[in-house]
Length: 444
Image 1 (cartoon, rainbow, N blue to C red):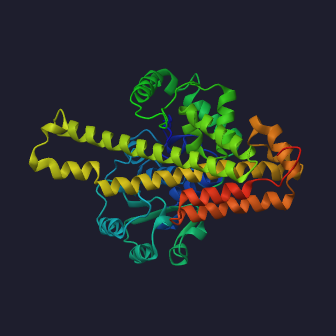
Image 2: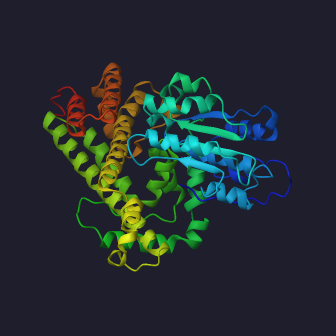
Image 3: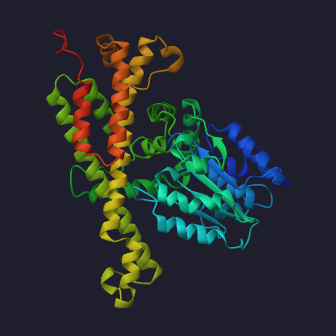
């Protein structure tokens, strides 16, 4: 989600941690040093890797940087055609499997396995990167097992997952594990300012285009429930960058979304204030309905935008002016490129669940802050919801430490149920009703 920064490396050795293909990796100095060592010592190189880290820690970016360093004759200088093409996901020897659906299908993995047997065409390795390997079913994972256990001599597998426990032991035991850290608020703040601050390349070259896009999005809204991409707050000031980093809680991708879309920050504030304002079960039901309606509208809008972008790209590539000009012979290819209705529904489900996951993180941050305050650890651990500190402090007085922890566990239970195909409406209603604090005549 970040732009590539190029370095002026001229030596034939691997670049330093602040240079080359590693320049956009945030908060992972130890991991970078480890992978750079591997690149310098190919005789010790494993061929199956499992990169784990919490959402937003940059697993896939690290995987791409590692792949670029392996394919680059200079160890990942970041300036050569090989590095640029790997990071842009256009290198013929590096394949990235991602899914916009809920799960990775068995057919996708079979195609990847078949491709892995081919000899590399340009670089020394054929590298297969799988995002979110935890989204595989056990049956699908079994297709991958033999390849990960005994890769072809020229093939490397890099699997990415939130945690080692999210991957089946049969796969996990056959990979070299690399665990990413959660970037600190300071590190994410510095990254945001470098990318979107007043002196950034974005501010100098792309801000006007971003604002024009934001204006088009605002004008094309079909419903008040849909969220436009607001550009207020750009270029970032240090204060806004720090706020975005703080509420993102180490999630780099989310911090970027906050930086580019201030409406998301405002929506988050509505959710947090809604949780802090719960007084009765009916409040929970109403808030759950608002969350679900907003998530569905956002998911529908996002999938629609992606479909329109794919449609426009197809037309440009085939020299057509509109969909009315598509000849019958190309209609099937067009439908495949844009995606069938069933594919779009699965994609919308994935987006909607991602939104619920983000909302649940926002809700959990309230009770995380309460636990911090109750442990008198604000000085060392910090408060996420600084803007609502007084309300958080008042709720911390009303809840016991046990009740605060129970509410954190309730959030995780709701997360598991929603990700496991539960009814988001019912699960959120149950959660928010359970979060209503005990009756207090001074507050109810």
